Image 1: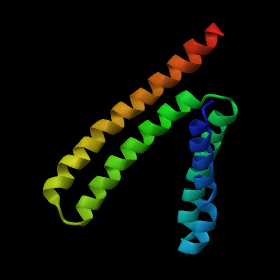
Image 2 (image 1 turned 90 degrees about the horizontal axis):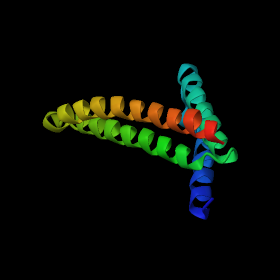
Image 3 (image 1 turned 180 degrees about the vertical axis):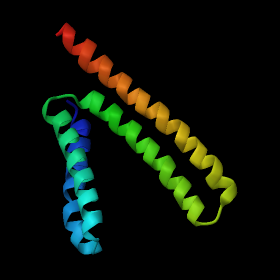
Image 4 (image 1 turned 30 degrees about the vertical axis):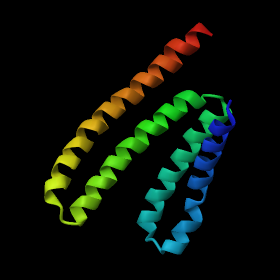
Length: 121
């Protein structure tokens, strides 16, 4: 595994672990803490599983797909909050389309890797 892959996965794991002290500093409500804790734990579980079981390539593809959809969504929300309706409308439509294709791409990559790829080994 490359040093850059190792560094990326270690930084991802440390980012999601660092979310827990942030809950206290942000003074979140209990309902928000439960939801964000669950999300952080799921990210830690999947990223560390991909790292320790040496599935870094498929993990990297899945992370890039997820973060690309989140980037488009946050751009659309930011433009909506800034009052740019001409930008936010098409951005949300782009997000809806990219979200569906990213989920199908994630499912396809996982099936091709784990079902067909591991069967050959």
